[in-house]
Length: 300
Image (cartoon, rainbow, N blue to C red; front, top):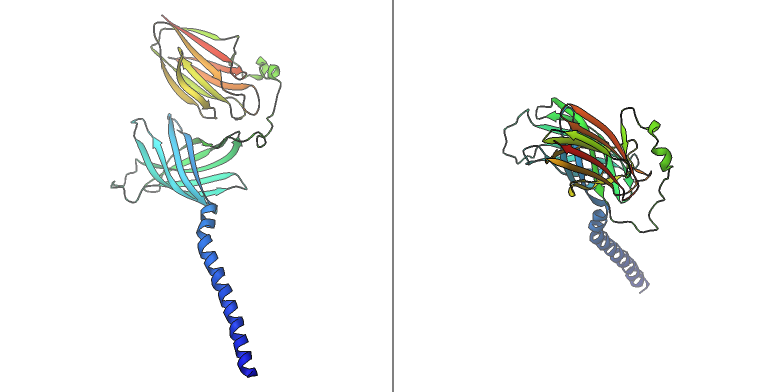
């Protein structure tokens, strides 16, 4: 009788342990995919890649990251207007604020291998600027045969959801009047502001305007208009030049540079290089938010 009771007690304890183990296993199996999904982040970065000695190309990259490993694809828009797609793999490190990735040809692309195709191998660092994250750095190009085929710079932007008032970090300030003093501007670079523009007389049908950030990359945004029509809207300035080809009409043509914000270090500073044939005009636009600097081109 006592032996039977002992055996039943042992079996009951073991069944309780087994039931607990089965319940625990169900919880792990049910929630592990959710945990894995929570650790997997998706990124969309858009910006420019500038190859040495060539123009700037529009560049966009889409990837997911899990435990620091990234996988996705990129698109590069060349002058023919058609994007080139590549598979992207690499690493992203939150501690060093770095992104390293390599492009390669899609395995299902029915293309003969050619050394004319140059794939990017990039090393970028990133930092947050307001509701954006700016990625900048350099890349080298490797063709399908593992040979070096060029190098350049890259600047990409990741848009973030608007932060609440409590989440917004205080912005740095500096003396605007001091920042606009001519002695702080490199030689032969003119300053244009809301009250002091630039007038140029030309006979050209088209001029070229390069726009980029002057000095520290601090999140400045500008809008550029030609005779009231937008050429760039809320464009985030980086260390890479954005080139605009501007057609001119007979008579007065007005290029307007509007400060969309003042970045982390006011005021808004946009470096400008206007090329009229062999003539070059170096300018820096200093403006408070909403102010406009104007370049007037008179075509004769």
